[in-house]
Image (cartoon, rainbow, N blue to C red; front, side, top):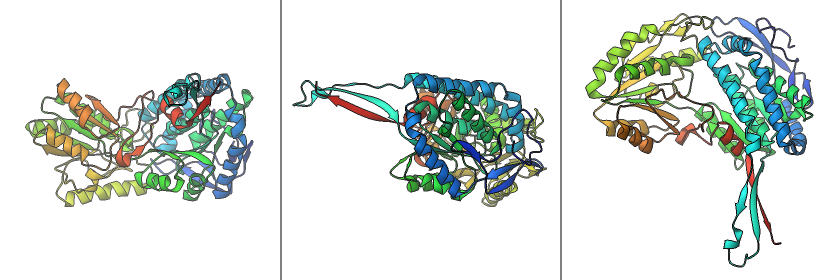
Amino acid sequence: MSAGRTAVPAALSWPAGLPIGDDWVPAPAVRDVRFPYDASVIASAPVGDAALAAAAVDAAVAARPAVARLSTGVRRAVLGDVTARIGRHVDDLVDLLVLETGKPRVDCVVEVNRTLLTWSLTAEEPARLHGETVPVDLTPGADGLVGWFTRRPAGVVVGIAGFNYPLLLASHKLAPALAAGCPVVVKPAPATPLTTLWLVAQVREALAAAGAPVAAAQLVTGDADVGVALTTDPRVAVVSFTGSAVVGHAIARACAPRRAVLELGSNAALVVAADADLDRAADAVLRGGFYASGQACISVQRVIVERPVLDEFIDLVRGRLAEVVVGDPRDPATRVAALIDPGATQRVLDRIGAAVEAGAEVAGGGERAGTAIAPTLLLDVPEAAEVWHEEIFGPVVAVRAVHDLDEAFELVNRSRYGLHAAVFTRSLATAHRAIDELEVGGVIVNEVPGFRSDVMPYGGVKDSGIGREGPRWAVEEFTVTRMAVIRP
């Protein structure tokens, strides 16, 4: 068990150090992990460096042939074993996630349940890795040739996860890599390493129980130097990153021409058509704009309302804003709590202030509420304001009015981002038009843009990233086709 632990649930334990190669190795430093709500220390976590990152890649490269040879049955068994281990510690994991992320408890429950689903779904994917025959004899002179392709492990995978959903995001890297037969090195966000350390410990125990190399799953903590060492190593075949657009674009440039799967930021839009059920649309803004304290890349940020229903819609949202409880994230009633650190809080407050200076009206919130930011509703937000055109990553919803759906859809698309967007309408024609015209990775009709089932392909377009997550699609990202041609 790591030294310095003060608040981690007793049932969750892992060795000291970092899981690199076949053992847990000492780290050159430790760092306090703090509860964002009151800045109290909940644990001391090991901090790695570039040398340990290189050592992890060394071990992954050495393990690659053995991991690629693991049978379908062994891969499936390991994934199923990890699923069961997570299932035995649901409540403890929720408690730990609340402490290290500061997210409201309700959101941490969702994260653990989605993590369970992700591992159980991925356990079925090794049995679905197959190829197909190819009619190569269509080519002149190829009479008698037989061709087919199979999907083979791409090689070493590096998975870098964000702080907002550390257990779930790490799982979307670890589980598909193992299903594909790839050794994987995970780097959690510096502020939230604890649940990922526990998870990797469980994965390594499951690998050992199945007779598989434990170096198939490794973890290195640390700052940007660790990330650079992992993503620029030419022996890494795929980098899967969840985080900001700025960092994601730098990673894509650094690892080229190797593959990058990038799940990046967004400023998700919700369009309210004149024929929408306004009560449901208002409810979606309250649910979708403030879950995880707004620290979600597909939380409602931009609300675009057809002018004939604008006043009624704003009255509905403003009248219910007090329902969004702000407070201690350990309280099941809390919906908004402190952001990940004081720097993030100040950044959001500064952007609110800049929007107001540019002409936006504060219809609710806009100030501190203890260590949190009160749920904020901004009206008439200029398009040039950062709270509109950049990802806010806080409990802020910005509203603009449009004359018609043509203007609404054009405004949604007039963004460098394109992850998810939502449309509220009673018209099937409008719904299909949104699906056809909105330049995003997912169009959600009559539900929050933050809806994500882990079984579906998930990812964005434009600056919101490239590639897709979700077990089936991530496994494909972590494999390559190998063509075989035989002349009998």
